[in-house]
Length: 130
Figure 1: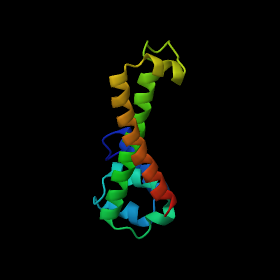
Figure 2: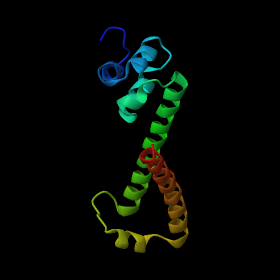
Figure 3: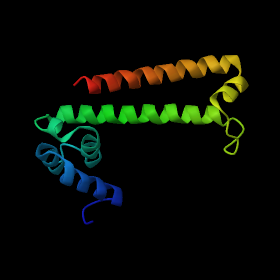
């Protein structure tokens, strides 16, 4: 693990070396791509699509991956919070939870959820259309 600041950094570098396209590995080795950025590219972009991408495009792909991951996590947390208003031991159906939510909060929640889901669906559609 010499030269790495954490076990996470070591594992991410190993992932890139084992599963990344040569241009991704080389950009990481030259320091043009951070190890975490290169690892995000490898997790998100199919190997055949990694080949030939410039460093700037690789960075852009990593940013998209991080945004999609953050949006999905936020949407999941919103749903978790909504479905367990009484605490982690109280499991409600979606219908039961919806009946407990004040109208003004429901509108705010729906607006936020719709925005996150619209972005995620557009992103999934763009990925499928490639």
